Image 1: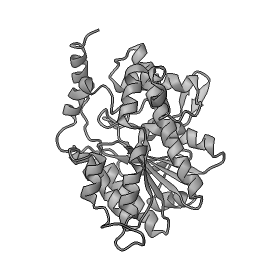
Image 2: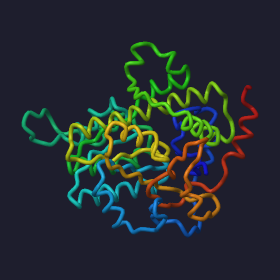
Image 3: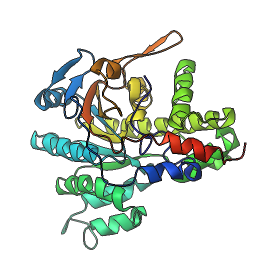
Image 4: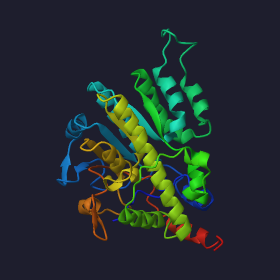
Length: 342
């Protein structure tokens, strides 16, 4: 079963094809709808296929070095849950390093300066950085909704002086890969990548299918190749970022905020971190918007089989939520595609 997160904020190339996808973003406007579905609000462990309470989920988190919170970027409930989880972990005595897909590696120093600076600190210069100053430095002045989602996490991290890092590549380098491919980059641009040597033909085939489905059936061979190269480069960078904090702070867990697709099937970032740290305990929690029409739990927990490879279900733990929209944007998208040049 392909992920049915909803196109808006799904994480599949949200920086890509902006002109073509503008119609989809329009479809996501308006107040969040409400829909009855017996799964909403419930947490399930995929391996046992049983419902668990939040307290049990937190017990599993206590044993994990890396905790992934897989979100749909524009779903407000997902960000509320992230804040609740971080607050709970802090109250339980854990002080996780907090990583974000939505910030780049190069922005880490701004994030660290914001959360680590304090008035009167020895050797400090001037006043601590304010949230407004951080927003300007990050270039987020025009991103009202996204800032309202992530700034509460940053404020809480500052309150407890948690280390915070950006984990993704810059928008500039990802945009270049999407346009011209990795082989077209200059030597200087290539030095901004963190290649791990990941190769898996069945995973590539699965992602080609999902990129195509996420774009409502539209694809071109050359574009799919470049999208996949961008995808792998970003996952490599995020896994490298997490690994650096694990090495530097071996007694401190990492909580990573990222799009659900980046850890789906225990692949991508999850798999690359496991490759760096054999035997490491990670926890893959996906905040899953329910399908547009109610489905049985078994549909969500199915493994994915591509050729001879059996991939794990999308997540180890599913926390079900409402969707941002229950309409099918692909109907409008297909009409828009008919106007695009061949």
